[in-house]
Figure (cartoon, rainbow, N blue to C red):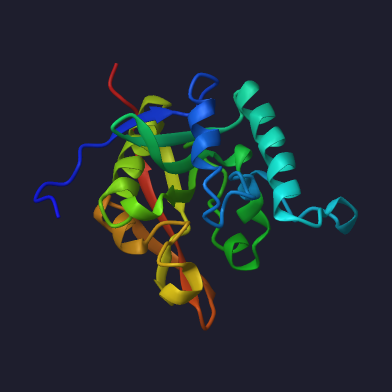
Length: 211
C-alpha cells in the first residue's frame, strides 16, 4: 500500500468534460441509472413516465442531464487521478436543485428570503477502488472554491451522519457529516432517521472572492 495519498485534480462539469462525466457514470456501480438527476427534479416523476429498467432510466436521465449542461443549468466537480475520472460532486444554486424544497422536515428550516444567494451541495460519487482516499474531500473543496468565485452565499448540504454500510455499499452518496464539519459546516437540523441511516441539514456561509 502506498505511503502517500495520490494527488487528485479537479475540473468543472462542462461540454468539454462531459465525456468524462459519461465515463464515470457508466461504471455500473449502482448510481449509473440516476446520472445525478434526482435533485434537479422538484418531485418524483409521475407513474406514466416511469421506465421499467435501470438501463432505460440511464438513457433518459443522461439525455436530460446533457440538456441542462448545454444550457448552463447543471454544475459539478469531476475528480481525476492520473487523468481518469474517479469522483464527482454536484453543486449549484438552489433553483437548479429544488428537490429538497418539498421535504417535510426541510420546509420548516428553509432559509428566509435574504440578500445572500443559496447554494446546495447534494451528491458525491467515488469509484470503489478510490474510496476513503480523499476524493470526496477534494471534490468538496473544489465546489466551495467555485461557489466563492460565483459570488458566495449560504451553502447547504444534506449528508449522512450515521448509516449501516451494508445498506449503502460502504458509500454515502450525499457525503458524510464529519467531512462537512471539517470544511466548516454546522449542523442545523435532523432531516431523516431510519433503521439504515440518519441525515442532517448542514450549512456554511461562503464569502465572495476578493476582486
